Amino acid sequence: MSYVDRVLENLKAKNEAQPEFIQAATEVLNSLKPLLDKDDKYEKNAILERITEPERQIMFRVPWVDDNGNIQVNRGFRVQFNSAIGPYKGGLRFHPSVNLGIIKFLGFEQIFKNSLTTLPIGGGKGGSDFDPKGKSDREIMAFCQSFMTELYRHIGQDTDVPAGDIGVGGREVGYLYGQYKRITSLYEGVLTGKGLTFGGSLARTEATGYGLIYLTNAMLKAAGKSLEGQTVVISGSGNVAIYACQKAQQYGAKVVTMSDSTGWIYDKNGIDLDAMREIKEVKRGRCKDYIAKHPDAEYHEGKGVWTVKCDIALPCATQNELNEQDAKTLVANGCYAVGEGANMPSTLEAIDVFIKGGVLFAPAKAANAGGVATSALEMSQNSERLSWTFDEVDAKLKGIMEGIYDNMASAAKEFGCEGNFVVGANIAGFRKVAEAMIAQGVC
Ligand code: NDP
Ligand code: 2IT
Image 1 (spheres, rainbow, N blue to C red):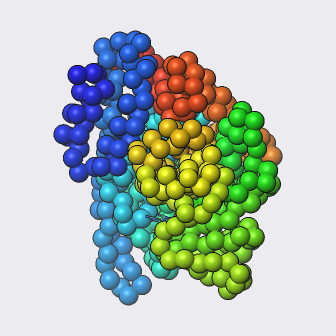
Image 2: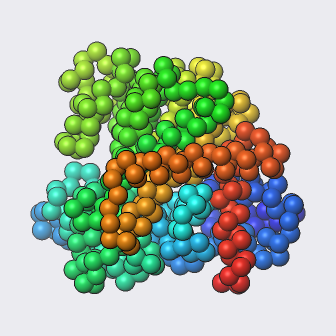
């Protein structure tokens, strides 16, 4: 049995109830085979066994009082996966579906993503099964304060630096930061995605969506194509989806769909992003509210954006939102490029359809790395107690995304898989972390 198969078998036996984590590990480990076959130092140093086991996993009780005076209890998580190349770095997700397996898959992906940014950040992730939907600001604050009352002892600007993810945006980061400061008396860059008045970086809000488009554009350019005049379908209508839509529109693309967990909008005239932002960022409303302003657009309940004919698909909602059948439908309808804004949005079977179908496929850990890269730029600004202009940060972000494209494309080529950016991104991200782990000895 090969080294990869042996490690995967053991991982499955040990983590039976964590299908998302197994899925993420299977994708990464299988695509490392060309590298591992070439050099046995990875096996000799037990790198796969070590890199698939988090350095530390923290689970804790989060009690809080709701607006009716009732005591609620949620479960909090922080998985500190790998610190070989820097302090643990990765977002916090507040969503009822959160469990240890979800946080482990996200933390595992983060190791390689963060390595690809070329910046000194290790991999971590956290969150809670708390559902922010329908909660008052006071309830959100009470929850965030309770969450931080335990989390603070495990994090710090040089130890572990959380940020946002699904359900955690500027409001939540603000409440979390206030509680950290109150408990520790430290005014430090312990979180990223902070407000602009207390150490946040310009362009961090836009960074993941913009970065997705910068990388997708680099991939298209290398294939002699561009976003200009292309029809784009986007899923989701949160932070990543909104700024991917904005940048795609700036590049001359026509974005025709957006969605949330209840339904989706098809606007053949192109999404009116100002209307969508008003609904989502100001009113915290639902996609179906878009119809009031645009009665010509279509609203459908459930899932369905992948049935819309397009040139380019950008999944920006959540894991496993795009399955094998969706991939076949997209390819049959002429979609020739996919950029993953969400983490692990495509199932393993869907990825297979894209790769075999010759679709230009930019995997999440490369395509959505712009968010965490800009978080690392926020950490730099906090350390030097300066703040850079929007244009400075945006230019650095663009350079980083173009660098990631070059790096994953050349790694794929080096290992005989030209154009397979899954192999390229995984090998390029893994190599740096593995070298650091070997140099640092058994730890
Ligand atoms: P938001 O909370 O801002 O938005 C999430 C969007 O996805 C909402 O439209 C939400 O709909 C939808 N969604 C969430 N869960 C589901 C589900 N189970 N089924 C269908 N739709 C769902 O999160 P972000 O935009 O920040 O994150 C989106 C994705 O991007 C995630 O995979 C995240 O991990 C990833 N990501 C985020 C980064 C960031 O900087 N924020 C960086 C890199 C990756 P609804 O409101 O109905 O729940
Ligand atoms: O998945 C991700 O990369 C994020 N949610 C952003 C993490 C961060 O630390 O900015």
